[in-house]
Image 1: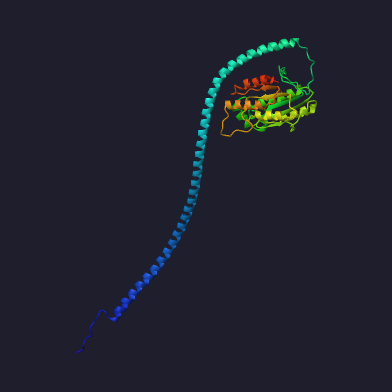
Image 2 (image 1 turned 90 degrees about the horizontal axis):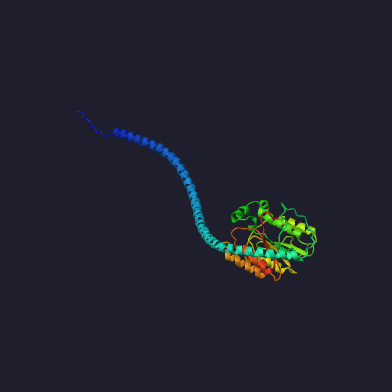
Amino acid sequence: MVRRRSFSIFSLSFLDSISCGFGAVILLFVLVNAQASRNRDEQVKDLRGEVDKVEIEILNLEKEKVLARNALDEVIQETVETQGLSREVIDLIQESKEELAKQEGQTLATKEHVNQLKTDLLSLEEGIKRLKGGAESEEPGEAAMAFAGDGTRQYLTGLKLKGNRTLILVDGSASMLADTVVDVLRVRNLPEEEQKSAPKWLQARRTVDWLLAQLPMQGDLQVVVYNDKARPLLDDTGWVSAADPALRKEMSEAMAEEIPKGGTSLVNAFTFAAAMNPLPDNIILLADGLPTMSSSAPTLRKRVTGPNRQRFFEEAQRLLPPHIPVNTLLFYMEGDPLAAESYWRLAVTTQGSFLTVTEDWP
C-alpha cells in the first residue's frame, strides 16, 4: 500500500505567497508615504511663507506702535505745557481785572483832579492873555522847511520852540501803533509797510515834520527815537546844525522809515539827553503814556503794573539834567489815567509846557 504524504498549510508555497503579498503591501505603503511627504513639504513651505509674511506685518505694526507711543508722549507733554500756560493766562487775566478795578477807582479821583487842573489852566490862560496884551509883538520867523497840513490847525499854543540846542525825543515803542491795546496787538502782526502807515504813527511823524519846519534856523538840533533803547535818527550822537534844511529833510525821511516796536524806556531817553555835550537847553518830548520799563526789559512772565510804570517815570525824571525845560506832546493811549498828570507835573517842575495832541493835528 502506497503511503500518502501529510498536508501542511504552512508549506513553502504558502509562505512565499504570504511574503510576496506582505512585501507588496509594504511597497504600496512606502510609495503612498513618499507621496504624502512631498505633499506635506509643499504645504509646510506654503505655510512658512504665510508665517514670514505675518511676522513682517507684526514687525511693521510694532514700529507703528512705537511711533504712536512717542507721538502720544509728545501730545501728553504739550498738554501739560498748555495747561501750565492756561493757568498763567488765567492768573494774568485775574491780575488785569484787579488792576482795572484799581485804576477805575483812581480814575474817579483823577477826573476830579483834572477838572481842578482845567480850572487852573483857564486862570493861567487868562493871565497869559493879559501879559501878551502888554508885551511887544515879535517879528514873525521863517520856516526851515515846508509843511502842509490837512486843515488850518497848524499851530500849538504855549509850546516853546526857542533854544540854541533843541532835542526832540520821539516815543518809538509798539504802543505808538494804535490807541488801544487790542489794536496795537493787531497792527503789530501786519506787514511792516502797513505798520509804518498806522494812523497814530503817521500823526507822530507829521508832528516831527511840523517841529522840524517850525524850529528856528539858529543853533543846533537832534531827533532821538526811544523804545527799549535811545538812538538818533541820523546815527550821530552829537548835535547837527539847525540852519541846514537838507539835514532837516534827511531827518524827516529817516523818520518815515521807522517802525514802532518794543517797550518804552524813558530812562534811556533821558540818559541819552544827559550824556550830550553840551547839554540841550530845550527838550520836546513826544509820548503816549508812562514808560513800561526801566533801563532794561522786564522778564517775560512779569507783568508791568500801574505803580511800576509810575516808578519808572520817577526814576527817569531823576536822571534829567536840571534847568532844562521839557515840553511834552501827549498822544492818546487807553488804560493810562496817570500819564497826563505825571507829564503835567514834569512840565511844571522843569518850567516847560504840556499839551495833548488831538486827532486832527497837525
